[in-house]
Length: 149
Image 1 (spheres, rainbow, N blue to C red):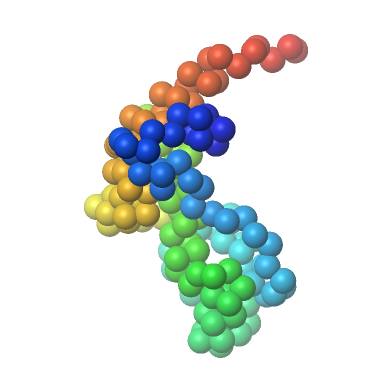
Image 2 (cartoon, helix red, strand yellow; image 1 turned 90 degrees about the horizontal axis):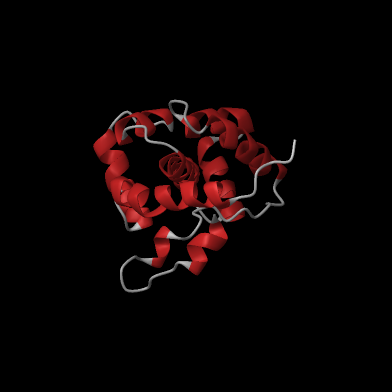
């Protein structure tokens, strides 16, 4: 999917942000932060994930947030938003669920906040993103050779 996005890059019509993965995927050296990152990857949708990461770390809140930012280059909340938006992108590409349902599933109770954040970070609305990349993913899957079972 990433290769398809790169090969179809249209600089005039769509911001390059729409094609990029929001996550950086870098492993961090801090074991406490690394443990919290693994937890967040599976629990980004829960209520107050940053508060739960602070508790999981066993550190004072200010210390945790400082260490997390030093290790990852972003605040814990920004990191959670990144995970949520990346999952939302995958859901928009793969299915036809309403945007409100996707927002709720990735952890946002307010779909309008989700849509504003998505547009700010991806430079497309969720609906525009789905139109742009949803059909592309389906065409790639249809063109893939059948699984020889």
